[in-house]
Image (cartoon, one colour):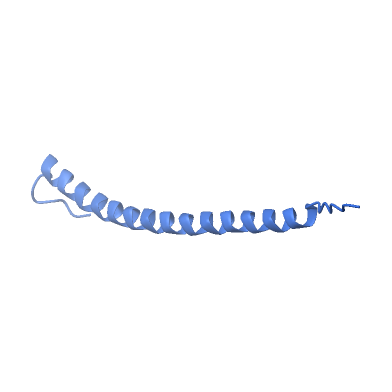
Length: 70
């Protein structure tokens, strides 16, 4: 085990911590943008599916009234 030749200061620790968290924050932001885009596509697909399902169901249950005059 090697002993550091100089003392590690608070500034050294803060600089290294910012360096490490900067990478994590950047990757998290990219993942967040991707998740939002995927979520929007999924929500649109669900809404479209519900609309089409309701439309076909409405056609099956629609009552046709025929009026005849004598």
